[in-house]
Structures are given as C-alpha cells and as structure tokens.
Image 1: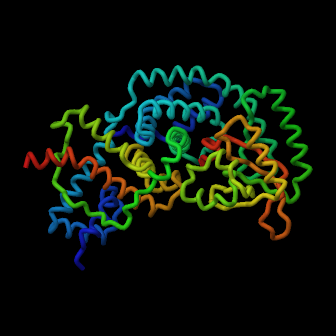
Image 2: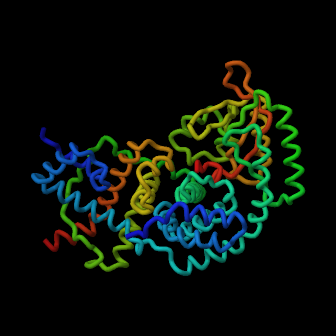
Image 3: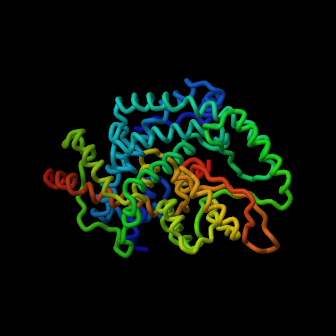
Length: 203
Length: 231
C-alpha cells in the first residue's frame, strides 16, 4: 500500500523553512515525495532515464519557484503539476509528432466489453515472480496512449482524488472518470495475455 | 430494469473507486450476480489497480535517489539566492491579478532592484485601464489545434505560423488577441529568447471600448512548466 499522504500543514511548514534557506527542510520534502513522483514519471514517460531526469527537474523547478507556492494549495498537487508539465515536455522533445497520433485511441465507437475474460489469480507475482510481474506491468503501461498513462499515474499511482486529477489535467470530473475507465480497461487488456493465460491454465 | 453488460462495464471504474451512487450500485450488484463475465472483468480490474498501487513496482532505484541528491546539491545554490532577491517583487506588483514574477537567475541583487524600480515606475504610468494576463502565447489560427493537443504547442510552431496574429490563452482557455504591435513584440521576444520552452507569457496592455484586442504595453516570457501550474 502507498504510504499515507502527510498532513498538509507539515508540508507547508517545511516549504516555509526551505524558503527561509533551510536546505534540510527541502530535502525532507524530497524524501517524502521522490518515490511517488518517480513512479508517476516512469509511467508517463515510459523509460527510467527520462523518469529520473523528470524528477530531478521537477524538484529543481519546485525549489526555484518555492516562494510562488500558495498556502491554500496542497504541496503534493503543486509538485505533481510541475512533474506533469515537465514529463510532457520531455515526451514532446523525445517523440515529437508522435504525441498526436498516440494521444487518443480511435476505438471510441467500439463497445467497452472485452471479448475474452477469464478470472486471474489475486496475486500474479506469486506465480510469475516479482521481476516478471513488474516487467509485464511496465510493458503494458508503455503501450497506453500518453493521456491514459497520465490519468492512471494520477489516480492509481499517486492516489490523487478524481477532483484533484481533473484540476491537474484541466478536464471535467466526468471526463476524468471516462478516461480512467478506458485506461484501466486497456491496461487490463494488455495484461490479459500473460495473466489470463496463466489463469486459464490453472483452471 | 435489466442492466446490460455495456452499462455494467461503464460503472466498473467508479465502483472500484467507491464513487458509484447507491441506485447504480444496487443495479450493478444485481447484474454481477447473474453475469460471470462481468464478475471476472471486475476481478481483473481489481488486480490491475492493485498492481499499480504497489510501491515496490516501478520503484525509484536507490542509486537514482543518490543521483537525485547530487543533482539537487549542484543545482540548488543559485536558485536559492535568486529566490531571496525576488521576494520584494511581490510587494511592487500593483497592477496584476494572478501575475507571476520571474527574473533570470543571473541577475544579481542590484540588477534586480534596478529592474524592479523601472518596472514600478512604468506600472504607475499605465496603471489606469491596464490589464495583466498570463497564459500560453499562441497564434489565433492554431487555437483549435492547441485545444485538442496542447502538448504539441512549441516555439517552432509559434514561429512557423504564417498568419501571425498572436494572443494569449489563459488557464480558463480564454483567448485574448494582441494588436499588430503586440504581435510584433511577442514574436521579437520569442526570437530573442534562448529558452525554446519559454512560450508562456505575462502580458500587460489596454483594451479600448468593447474590442477584445489587447493593446500590448509589456510582455514577458517565462518557463511554462512552472508558470502553467495553477497551484
């Protein structure tokens, strides 16, 4: 389970200390959020080197503009907005025009119900092993359009609320829900090969 | 009412998030009882989201965490000073609503102070009727492309635009076109900038009567990754 989100006040206190020149306070914030941000960055950019750079640039930009952080906002949300913008810029730089063709799938007319559905094992890693399960997950995420990867990173990895995700992505709550459903279904579809095969062999 | 599989699938994500309302939830459960396929699909989605939530997957490698700290250690010194110099900027900002101050890091305390004094003098001069707005700098003819794929908006695209009627799209998606002089100044600023990513502008100008056109008086390019943050 992801660790609980720390109290906003505690973050705010650290931000104020960091603004006043306390380097340790800033590093406490880094330790608190680096793992969470890295997972999202990896999901969005699709590779470890880009994810690492994205996190570095995010913290540098955050520190540089720390005095602009407004107390009424959540630090995690502010940081995530910078991460999202940085990751998008990296994707655009590295993949150029591919963004457009990858962004939204063309299958909107099709039904959402997949053709073949078999029950999976609750903990696939017990059968496949941790490394293989992680490889499958990473591979499946990389196959999703960027817009789907973003919504999954925000909701299922950073555990932000639908409302927060809507604000970060500049979308309505209804659109976030629709996109999240499609993203999860498509991810399931991509995992269904290996995980479903094992499930049916077992059965 | 009989719930179709299509409807049941459409509810699955909200059900997983505990966001499905009570009426739909009851209909969804009824459907699941009679539909093994939807039961299996829901179970698959639960496993999928559980995998995504496990912190040990796609985890930050310890060596990357060390590299992050070295990179931060190397990069933090300068911005810290720049941040200190910038703080007074907030107090001399009489015009704007939602205006964000930004200064290059290389500007020392004195340079920043001089700029701020000049800015303050200028601000007082055109204060009456002045409007300040921030957003993406964009050519009016690229608006629809921008709306569907904002991430594709780049400086190259900006400079390629043949029509060249620039304006600014604010965070609410509202477009304010510039006058011809403003477009010229914006293009010059973009061309002069050494930062290809800086296509976010804070612009001050005047509006005459009911015209939507902004008569641009001052324009400043900034880093969109931070400026575009609404928090």
